[in-house]
Length: 220
Ligand SMILES: [Cu+2]
Image 1 (cartoon, rainbow, N blue to C red):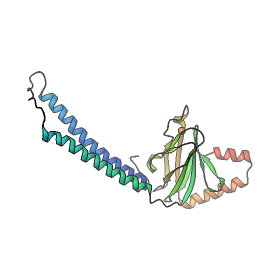
Image 2: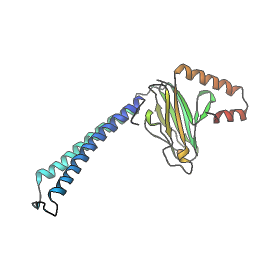
Image 3: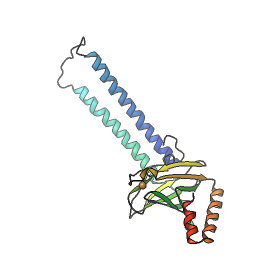
Image 4: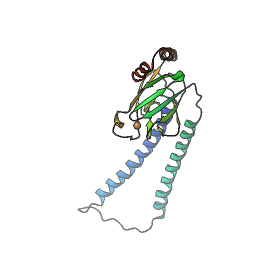
């Protein structure tokens, strides 16, 4: 997820970066003060601290500053969430069906594949994320956030790859014994190449028997 390759993933990584740097600043400040105090007021040869009860400016500071930090994080998060919730113009729809323990992908014209999802580069793909049994979760980190696959309902994920390539992903909701094997790959092809592949698969589908179609679905 630190090497984003889609517009949505860029937005998520930017938010992650903001949270990371703020958290790092807080960490360094808190740990720095802790070390300073441990050394300065150590039991052997250190100073004896002055006892203070009630320190209004200090108490205001440690109330107001975290409030401002959390408010900033809230605003950034809501901005990113609302940006990710809109502005997707569907150019292709596919369905990703989770099942113990593999992913099946369904394309227009009845074409299916397992484990490998092919998409055209630069096109906005709507992925209908569904499940046949238990809860799974679809995630290709370089291309966007996680989307749960919940039995009885269909969730939407949006994928748009910036450049051709293979983007690894996997089921990210523990779903049983074979969960760790429930890998997936999003292969982004040039749009022309994708069309050729889809047409060829559709033709192959029309000309094959049910067992052949089964074998076809299982070959990546
Ligand atoms: Cu799963």
